[in-house]
Image (cartoon, rainbow, N blue to C red; front, top):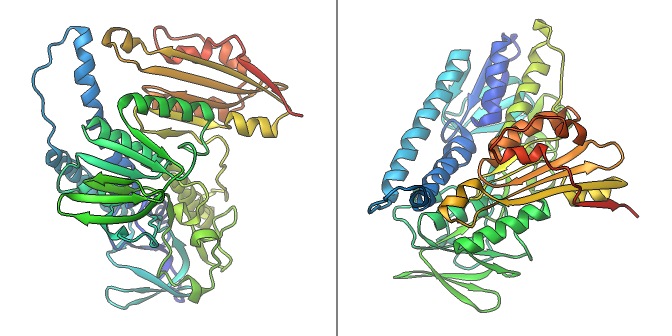
Length: 464
């Protein structure tokens, strides 16, 4: 319960994953908590990110399932995809989830206000909806990120981002995706499988920078077989709107016709208009709020978690950061010791088709950090493809410290990669060795059994 000097013990700005977790845990510890969200509860992940994206990925994969079922004896009749039905079903589901988020906060005793909140100074927050000033002992900024756009490109107002693409009025028969990260590639796969002509334009030489090279090569090859067109080393110079759609011009003068142009060129911390300057909160590159290992800013009593800090921009990370902060600030009375998030060995899934799963170091990073690196790698035709006739292949790769035998990284391309990589995060976090993998009994017939049956080393690298 807040003392007389404050209205609340914790004021949370942002109703996304990190904010709601911090608010609920803090309230459970007995703190008086208020949370302000100006849009919809659930944040990027629930409303316009991972949840609707996964639903659209699932929808897109039916196209392959229908076609490949013929190899298993099914006779598939006429079929038709209706974009508006998918959009409506998605909206119903995220509305349901939004309600659960709000109910969870209310059940925990958190006061939720539908309003933008602005920091007026240390310990003081203003609710824009009614002008109220709230005195807060602690302030948590959890406003997430926002899609980047290039304001220097004439006609940029005609494009859409990941915020709007889920709710397009009509399905685009031709879509151009600007960007080469995982968000761009996920949407490229969704729209291609749903039947659109898809072109990916990227300023670099190869998409998925930062991922293991074998994953990058494998996914690119799979997308090319799927019919996705890639244009490298170029960007849009201008975009024009015409009666029959959009026309984008690249820097080399090439014109590309499209019904929609999706910009997925990265995300930036959502800090505009929060009052950070007035409060004296330090920010870094792209406006990211600078915090220490405990999520504290340079201003006592002001904290930040999630994508707004630009540390590791993943929903589970924001949730863990919010939980750690709430326990640290308010868990002492229950005997909970302060703790901090460990960012080593975070498993990650990319919901392209084929799917990618990755945890730990890439081969490139391992070779830069360790004296001896052993690689174990396999690539094989998926069992389903043997009857379906598809060209799908599965790639699995173990990156191992050649001196200690510890597994430093695992990278998977193929069906179920996301599910597998979640479980693989556990042994890697525990320090499992290649010998531990070898000693584990295989489950047959599965793709995952290859992870414990790769005995022959593919390569060994010695650092000079």
